[in-house]
Length: 227
Image (cartoon, rainbow, N blue to C red; front, side, top):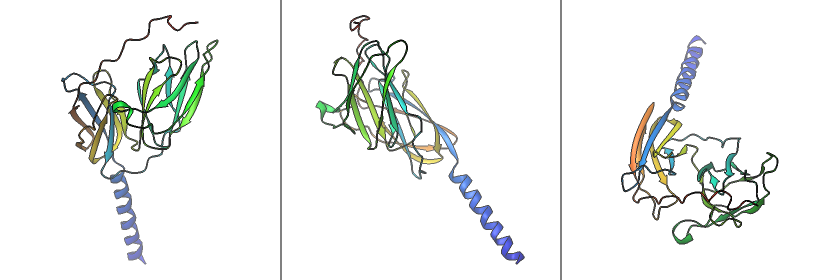
């Protein structure tokens, strides 16, 4: 009986140790440049560990604002099964629609949708929630203001980030071990090469896009769409 209990404790301890090792996570810091060597902002960085564990999408929605005739942020990422909340923060009506993206509109949107958002009044913003259940990309547009463009990436991986204006992205909670990093940018014409990394504690990696991203157009002049 004593031997059986001892063996059971040994098995339990081994299982707990294995679980602890399996859940060890680190941080990956990535710096992305364009083909010209300059920082590449608005690049989606997706990490796929070799031994991923299931992660539920966040309960809180990803917020995409409409402010100053722009989608803010310009590039957003939501996990498959997650929700996006579109918020109109301008004092005039907006429209939200999905469009095909990629070269010459050759990539269909991950989800078709179209709706109108009334203007913000008295500090009260109007919003609409949308659940995304298929991976892919969506080019965002507005029927009322043709200059408005935004991009939404629906990710099958829960480990993702978008690079800042210095081309940097930081992704926490990545399981330790080997992983692949996939990059996506709204201006790309072909897929970017996969990046192999080893995550342990805090890891870093650099990569260069196979093209030079275009400069974003300047904001619309103040008052151009005021009514």
